Structure formats: C-alpha cells, structure tokens
Length: 258
Image (cartoon, rainbow, N blue to C red):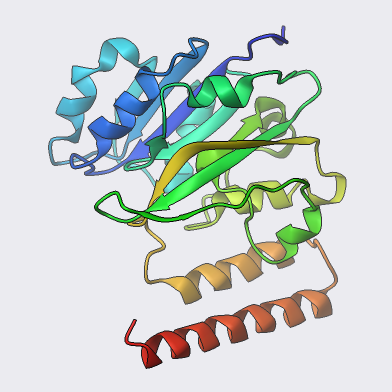
C-alpha cells in the first residue's frame, strides 16, 4: 500500500574509492529529520578506506554491499532492486543533502498515489565545497526542455518506484546520462511532476563526466535518437546547435584564460 501522508524515500548512494567524501554524504542522509527513509549504499569494491567508513555507520544503513560492478548504472540498479520506498533518490559519493530538514521539506504535501516525480533545486559545488551555482527555481516544467538537456539533476529528483516498474532499470550502456535516458523513456506520456523551491542537495564538481563534455553530448544525442523523442532531422539540428554552443563557449573560455 502506498502511504499518502508520509511516503517512504529510498536513498541510494553509489561509491568507489570515496573515502574523502563518503562520510559527509552518509551523515547528510542519516541525520535527516524525515524518518521514513531507508538508506542503501552500493560500493564498487573500494580499495581505500571507504568500506571502513560505511561499516562505522552500518546500523543506520538498511543495506550495503562492496563488490566489483559494471559502472554507475549497474550500482544504481543494484540499489533499486534492494529498495522498497515509494520514491527513490540517488546521491553520488561527494553529493548529499544540504540540510537536515531537506527531505521533510521536499516530501511535505506529496501524495505518492498521484505524483510520479518530485524535483527540487540543487547547488553545484567545487571540490572544496564552494558554491559554483544554484539551479533555477522552475515555476513550470515543460517536457520539451528534455529535447536539449537534463533539466532535473538526479540529486534533487525523487522518482516514484512505479516508473522503474514500468520502464525498467538504468541502461548499462550509458556511462554519464543514465538518469536522463530513463526519463526519456517516458517522454511521450510524461508523468505528473511536482516542483519544489527547496535547495535540497549538493552536486560535487568531480564526477565521471568532468572534462569529458563531448563524450557526454554524444551520449545525449544517442539516447535521444534511441528513444525517438523527435524526428531524426529535428534531433540532428538540436545536436549540431548544442555542439556549436559548446565550441563557442570553449573558445571564449580560452580567450579569457579559463
């Protein structure tokens, strides 16, 4: 049975050799005032001190495992299969919630029998924790924005488990954009989404996609074509436009020494 007043939230963290930041991420989850939470950590077989840190807090963790995996998509999928929450949220190593009340604020008033996606704002931080930018407060979501980019960062996105039941798990062929591709599967009949003006989580600027922008854009294009969210000509024009924007931005950055 789904719970209307207080949905269960499954928080899933994927980590590999993350001893520098994993404790900070764990504490941001287990210190939440919202109590209807289950926490799952999937470690990819770390060889540093990550596992020791996880063990330190294992009484607060519903499930954790440390074993070699096939990448982030595989790790997230393992977490999904172990979860039982109404909504699922994914926090990478080094990410985490901005305040102890973050999830309580996001889940306030959410009816999990009617709402399939809840999206809150995030802050992008550098390796030292300095704020690079805050995501915009979207007053209205237009699914057409998915034609160009992923406008709903997974750190701030709470996905109803029925979407995984309907559309399946993350695709292991995706290295960078597994969350984006999963949403694109629902593009033609996009589910109801609630937007929350809450800075819920941080997104650390040291992920797998850093300095690999062209690879990310290539994957973006591939998954849009795969899911047939528009006709091929439209998608080609959009991809070329995005590439032009990237090249111009890169060139201007070089001119200014960035």
